[in-house]
Image 1: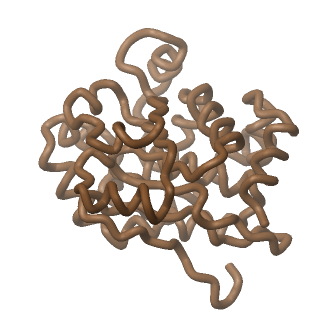
Image 2: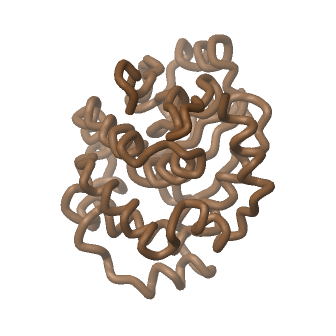
Length: 251
């Protein structure tokens, strides 16, 4: 990162703890990711009326991409935010059937979170591609989120930043920034029986945002695909889509 560059721009909200602007970072060529267009977050179901007003009037939030599974949504709900935005449910992992379920069944649970992120990249290719396409085409501010705002959300953030030419060092630091509020995020997850079970089944490190995990994910992606662009080409995100993404999001 360049000297003096600010890491992460928080949006202070009462009902969630990891809502932040993904913009503001510089590419290796010196362009800047525009702020106020793409946000990342943890669960939005407990946003207060004041939060909803802030997101509507100050940010102009128009779209929410929900990466959570149907099981998670059934337990936690979507909250009142769904009434004032366009909602795009894109669960990375389905509960039953489909190609993604088959892909998941071909893997054993990895031993660390970096390998799990790589599993997401492979097994959840289709919904991840759809998120990238949406972000290339939205014409108003949008947020994508999962439960903690660091794992599924972290993988998509890393891909997006990498596709825009943001250096790995910045991507890793942005991922680890979830540590700032990790205790509050984890306390909320542990208050849910569903999330307690999910977290128990995940690799060691699931309650953290260790930068080494994101570094490993980026390394594994490049070992397989050469680059984020290589992954995009393999996955069906063509050069025209990538150009729209850059034109919309980079100064």
